[in-house]
Image (cartoon, rainbow, N blue to C red; front, side, top):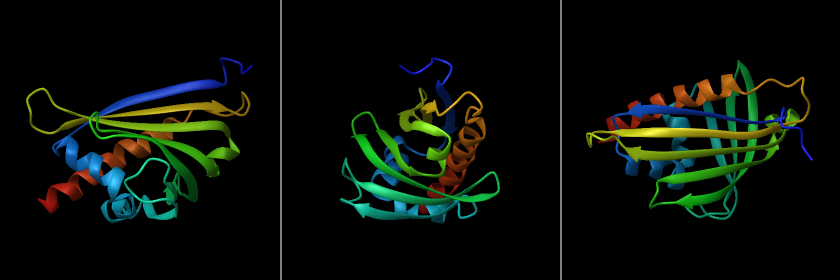
Length: 157
């Protein structure tokens, strides 16, 4: 049984002026275009198994975090178009050197005023040992990536 000190969860909301549909569509159907929105953070996304836009698809990200080039191989566990939610489970990569498990969920909801969205990021993880820190800098990475994506998607309209 895992120690509760090793299990963690970080969450944040990011407000953007893009529709929930457009932001969700990018993550589900066009993750290989994310690097166009923030090339200093994300260098690419390669398809390993399955098809973009379908649950069970396995993808590999190349990204820069804390000044270092990293990789992440993930499976899309859940893709809920009604709730505008997508869940990525880490399979391999740099994060797995410090975490036993790592799951990222992105849910995009319309703002109450109907203009734009609130992007809710959830990081669920289990650290390999107590010497590992919580991934606050990764959460900040996703906040900045969300803003970069919104700016790019705004130009597409």
